[in-house]
Image (cartoon, rainbow, N blue to C red):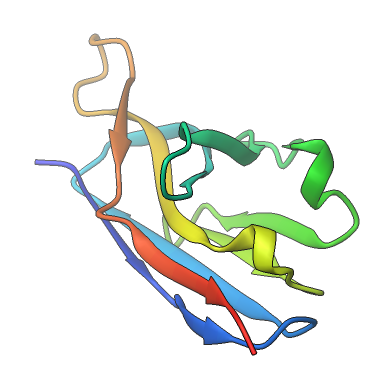
Length: 120
């Protein structure tokens, strides 16, 4: 059974930093990984994604402030968030495209979500 466990959310002042982590278990292989977020009353949006070889993409609003990375040996994806703004307040969800059997295509799995609140 594939599980994704997130950690690292919390309350931070504007201009501050946070690092989110997401550990995957139960998968035999992982393709793309990344992070979505959902603010109250808004749709979930893709924040950042990273391929198995380390190629990353970001939503325009977080470029130059957020960095996504992964450790394939640890089956972990990270989101380093800097210069946080009130607009970054949301629940952040990690995802991973995981294989559970070599002959079965990868499926997307989700973390439980972690709250990030940017406020003074």
